Image (cartoon, rainbow, N blue to C red; front, side):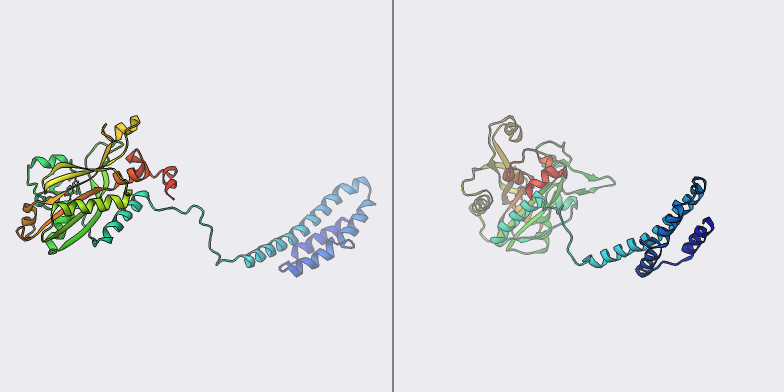
Length: 335
Ligand code: DAH
């Protein structure tokens, strides 16, 4: 009997099982109720205990090899079926879809408000030269006002720096265009400042510039009131404060009321309850002269908005650093 089983083992090893049809034939021949294995097992039962040991092993080998051959084909067939059922054109599940960064969203809101009244977009480089960032803005070398903005210089060349404000774009635009001018310029700016809840070494500004004949401070004030009411609502608490900037005369700063209840309110607002969102003023005639615009014919106003400060006010964010940390627990709240 052992010889007979060995022969079957050899046979089945040699048999090529390639298709599902082959597999079915083998199954019927060997494994079915009246198949070879069944007969062999009946025969096996009649053997003496001694013979059973060896023969049993052989029988099991035959059964295993046969089953493995069939299984291989049947599984492959399953895979084929799955492949055919797979719709490769079906759109995937975008579960972890991101959202616009809150700063981007606030920036776009601001741009839209200005667009509505005829301001168009303009931009300039983040790596600037001394002229556009300082000198042309009425801050010649050694002017004390340069200390208001701690600057990152490019080490090898003190003439090249990371712009400290978007006011540099004013100069670039005025050098290449003639009035009337009505632009806004959003962008990143850099300052060598200690990072805290209300200051960062990198932040975002939006510059506004309006030049025409007969532009007055009341035009500036009207523009700003239109802007803050569009953004924060009609009930917004806003105040103008006289200030100083070398490139505007007169100059002002605009504050929005934040609140003064908690310790955090005190820290964020330096104990005043108000948060500054922009500097502004009437363009100094010296600046117009620097870019060859006739300051006897034309006048204008300029303003520079802090995007982070505005986003803090709009979304009650009490620490500016949150905007830069890419913490999903924070970002997800703006979906
Ligand atoms: N550039 C100023 C700053 O970053 C902000 C500013 C003030 C911009 C007055 C202006 C302006 O255009 O007129 O501190």
